[in-house]
Image (cartoon, rainbow, N blue to C red; front, side, top):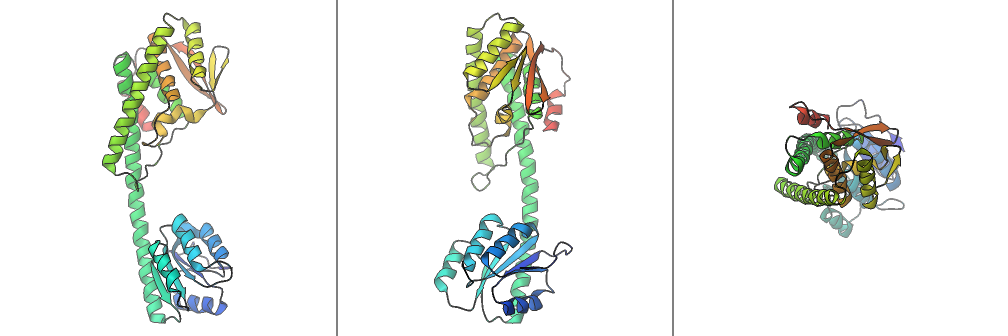
Length: 333
């Protein structure tokens, strides 16, 4: 396998895969002035080149007939893992069925038959490089847009948590929200990227509103159950009641003195971090309902990261928070 250095060049690299050494030299001589060229002699070598240099490659050109697998297998591999790369199939043989199949499956952008016309080949590769640059710019803009939308989605979910709390225990009580969000930050919540091949913006709004509504209903039901089963508990009884409720719901927590030790950190970020089409589990609703119920008993849990777990210790709930406290939390996500 011969690899030219592409990292110092401004132009995206071209991968050329062909088992004929003469074709490789011919291609490098004809195309090398347009962009860095990385070469391989088999489908496996082509896959290795893609995996090593995929982010800096703009075009993949593969011969069809090579020892082992055919070139369209390499192009299929590239289309699934590196869809931004412009894919070109070349061959000296008339393998129309395989070529048509590759086109129909979206594995190739262009088919070029050997022997090459150098002028036409250079023009094809120049156009492919330009297309690769356009795709790169498009992907950059899409990533920026997705980043903004993901941040907006996370902010909306934080607002939904606040709205649930205000509806169920009163707008003046902020402690459960503070504890919930502090735990999520300690657990390193990250908003999952929406699948924009399956959702448009209106779909996302509908999915988010339905998800929040269902979650809010689950929280309300679990809060009512806690109130009925554990009325008038003191701090020790309240923490024990919460521990028992969490364990009963299938949440893995353990008691250490007066603290609850929570090791399943992703479970603390489920509502905030999971995709919109993933329903929130009842276990997570039990967790938030427990924080609301504790507040009604004038207690709260204070989360502290301890290694790979988070320890929650009972404290007196706070009654005053800065007016911009919610905005401060949103900025931390």
